[in-house]
Length: 358
Ligand code: SF4
Image 1 (cartoon, rainbow, N blue to C red):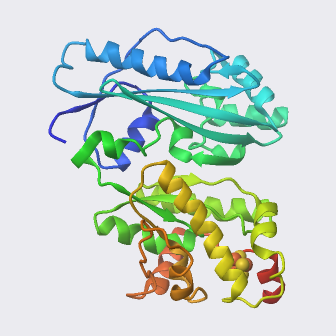
Image 2 (cartoon, rainbow, N blue to C red):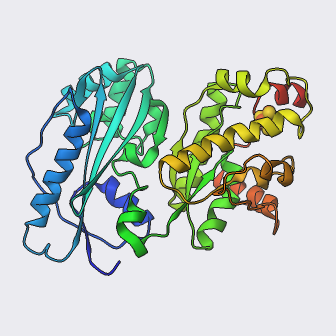
Image 3 (cartoon, rainbow, N blue to C red):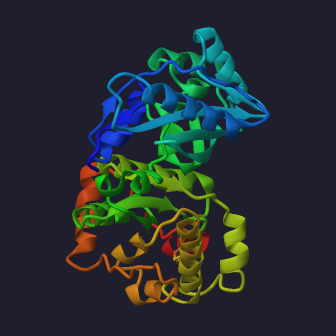
């Protein structure tokens, strides 16, 4: 990217995301007027991002620079939860969002072009004491919805689906197209777990690819186990400056479409082949919907997953058959996940693998 990049936002979280991508940028804070249309959250974030872009474009010193602006809101039941005015309103927001699922919308404007990203977040059932404790630790005033998933987020967030970076305030997926040479085109990495991904993500980055992790694992038997593995994947993403996208968790669908009739099949056999196909099909769908030219999977790290069986699970032309077992990939994953202190599961994922493991 030859031109300067101006981030038209004072958000430290957006700056953190751009720094993780290795992009050089300047910050210009804007005080553009904002709209709030509860009946149309997409229009709200799009127009607010465009308004910030326009104010920044017309500011002295912006001539000739690329400008990136964004606006993020929390939305639930037809209501917009922006940045709370004070601690009392922050508590009100957290009480209302507690125990429920809301949607996060981020509108992004780059040189006049716009994109919108959405993610779903479920907050824990929060007591008054937990809300007080969270507000003591995290200043909620500057945060849409009065929470920050990236700062003590575990205290309030039960689960999320979609782009983690979008929840922070800036989805990175459109940036490769917008910033051109400044960012390598992403490869979508189906991520089976944090330990396996800990070997794949740095290898892809070292090869000049920009891995975007796609955590899609409806094969996991319980939501609690899914969250534990997602947390480990998040640590890998944060440690490598990678974006992490979490797919919807639907174990009932997986049981119906994959396991039914194959419950007693041994591992590395027909059920596992169907399981790989299911997860890679979801990865292919996400890749197609979000403009990725290539995807791979961390499944090939594990010695328990025959690479040939994994490779046979997708005929999609964008599927790159990268065998991460090669060059001691599994050993590397053990070393890296130990260094990061990652949770390591002791069974593959579904209840049938657990039965055999115990
Ligand atoms: S053992 Fe593992 S790969 Fe095989 S079906 Fe179960 S979760 Fe999927």
